[in-house]
Length: 488
Ligand code: DUC
Ligand code: ZN
Ligand code: ZN
Ligand code: ZN
Image (cartoon, rainbow, N blue to C red; front, top):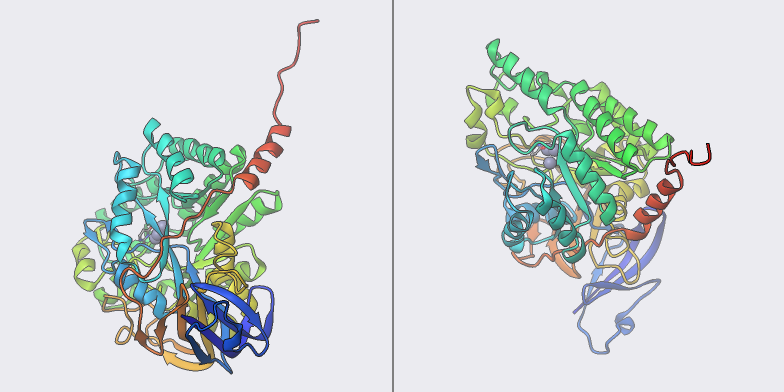
């Protein structure tokens, strides 16, 4: 079975040109002018010809930050690996990077296997970051097994969530060092967990128990301090670092300064933080305000401007969603205590459309930059490129066909996610996906989901040994030496 996309415009992170694209056996096999059924590799192959004139052919989106069916804060996220990846495909995203999050003390390999079992029903491609939530010799050893045998090249650290999954500084130091030895990249959720905990208690004591207290318990400095601390630890050790969901100017500044010092630091921003501000917590409806409780919280508007500019300038490289959906009933667990509202919002279906509307149509990023920040950069940083994130002969046939003139209004009434609310509710979009091709198959087309549970493939992400070894060598050149005093 082959698919021939005819008459379209290919848009990659580096160029835009007219070409036909032939996909066979899950791969892109030919890109060129006037391709026909005679171009197939195996004579007699069935070819589905799709007219994509007036449409753009782009690499399928990669969402480097989702939490499908995450057990979290006393419940389990409402989108599982089937509904969550269906939503991804409907939005033009063909690969998600989700998170294995071991409970403190739980063996890493056991948690990893649990997530592999849960994710078997994925419809899009998927892979995992593994969180380091505790430390002992077995963690040190299992990180190697995961990196060398299971294609895990990134390990996540939550600097928040005290008394749960928080990684304290001693864990950061041990784990960042281990990441470097293995050629993996350390990633952090940067928020000072001690401060959050303290501010939460203070607010509750004052009787401010509603969702409006959530952003007050996690002010910008709480994130900025942790971002700066994580970078300082990583840079001192010489370990590359990726900061997830940067939401404030303070984080962007910390990243930019580190980059200017020559350190490898990468930053991610969420579609939500780029477009939704903290006024949502003042909503008179408890439900609507609580629907926006996620961490880090939505921020005062001035931060959005900084985030967009950082994305455009390349200080931040990737966009994600932190898709972690909770329905109203789950959010209501925190009715009398905002600290018990399950943290999380959705967006995996809307990310590309929101980035196109507010980014490309809004004059902030070019279509090529759109491809870079929605797909290619994540593929490069997490070592999936050019199998993923590229429209190239030999790359995986993971594509989104984009209609730049198509319109839609985002609404919970029509979204695929299993929740009643949508943080982008009412946003008018011009520029929408019309077809998503995943592993060479039409997975979603014009509102119709064609993929089935289990169609998604697990993506192995080998470690980056040469890159990290060269960093280590560079560091070794600057190794301190003891003074030789034997002849004194
Ligand atoms: N933040 C959320 O909002 N949800 C899941 C985990 C996280 O860090
Ligand atoms: Zn996080
Ligand atoms: Zn989060
Ligand atoms: Zn997250």
